[in-house]
Length: 206
Image (cartoon, rainbow, N blue to C red; front, side, top):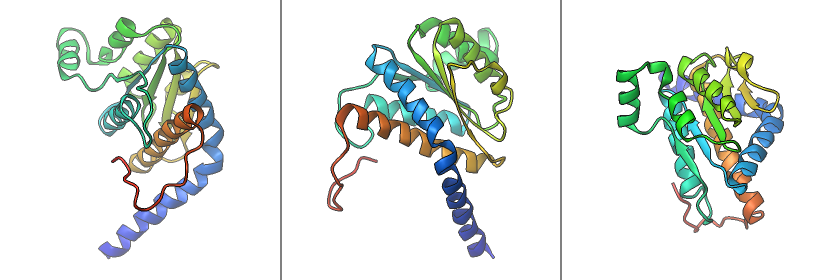
């Protein structure tokens, strides 16, 4: 029983990835181009999310500042979910809904990208961050699930939404991780050219 349930998890995840390959590829390409234009133009990527999405946002920032799979110069990125002192300070002194938006207003500039992750698209602090990004004339890349939630209503035509057509947060987050990897890989490919074939004995960064 448990074995079959585990196998079904793999099958469901693979099926959704296959479905999204063609459906979401154009939006992921647009997101990659937006991020690339920002970092090559002297801008940066500010990213945020809640819970597991916060961890994904932090992973993305680490891959940009460090590396994804290949050595390259550092790229400017910061995770707004990572600084405990800032997060708790804003929550205590102001409002939990402002934990990201105050950081965006303090640090965001025209030409930057705000990359938000929300499986529901309804997180109040993420919505506030998007509004703050628009005030700073930043482009927003929104990774959402289901039907995009309230985020759909606040995005502009110049923003990019990658909406995973699924209602289960775990499945949506799995695609979000893949999308982030695609963005990292796409930026590297544009900056460094297509990679050589990776041989089995080559060490790959975790």
